[in-house]
Image (cartoon, rainbow, N blue to C red):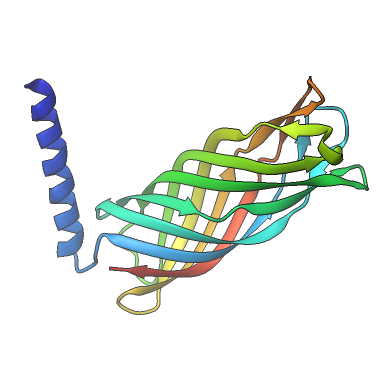
Amino acid sequence: MRKQTIAVALLATCSVTAAMAQASGEGPWVVRARAVHLDMANKDGTGLGLSVNNRTIAEVGVSYFIAPNMATELTLTTPQKQTVYLGEPSIGTFKHMPSSLLLQYHFTGLTGYKPYIGAGLNYTRISRVNLLDGGASLDKDSWGGALQIGVDMPLDKNWWLNFDVRKVYIRSDVFVGADNKGSLKLDPVFVGLGLGYRF
């Protein structure tokens, strides 16, 4: 009975806060499409001198406002191919698909722009690892934190210009044969620019 009461209370709270967001004249959903540049930290704990290239990717973010100044955002992309270097020469490639779930605080009462901050969890799936012609491998899963700061600038009633910066913690152990050589911490900074639509 107690669990049912808590569940009903949570559903009622979500319904009320969504209604408040709609009453403010803005819908609770936002979809953003961004071009995002990944700037890798490349903190190599293996002692091998490994690094991974920077690159620009396409990303989609889906947000839901649970209150006028509180929202959640899920960021998604497709598997992205990265090149691994041992000093200067390349030793192969892998693909990764970083996704983050964030809780955001949006500053209200400002005109012309709407800044926000966020924090949450990142999950990155690593696949199609081809290093040293199969002689080296990486962990398939990476879990870590994500920090965010951004701003939405309204273009009209529904469309926004979005600028977003995130620090995302991505790391993987590196295996050569059966030997764990240590952790490669990519920990990239995501810098994104794009458009958002609120409904």
